[in-house]
Image (cartoon, rainbow, N blue to C red; front, side, top):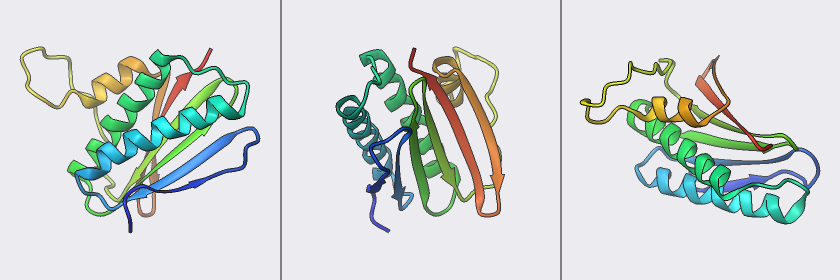
Length: 143
């Protein structure tokens, strides 16, 4: 599997793209770049106005979720981005069945703040168990 291999959906509502990653540390930066490219494409194709702040939040969420997948799940992971007029859905699928849990805020703790960050910048987060692992889906409102 080649990191960053992307497939884009049609340029009709909703706009969707999927990329697969081998699960190496390089997947994190590749997934961030994939997200930036997707958002640039979305700006050019439709009436969806994505602000710089929303784009930054999307790249951050993808980075944190893919970091968790690379760190805690054996094998590949997938990033799916789906944009409708009102929201961007970010899904990261990996091969681990273990559900991520946000820890209580602790300013003295070094690291392991990723899920806290995701929860702080998203409008929703859910986890779906799958036969091959799980899907973590975050939602960022675009209005």
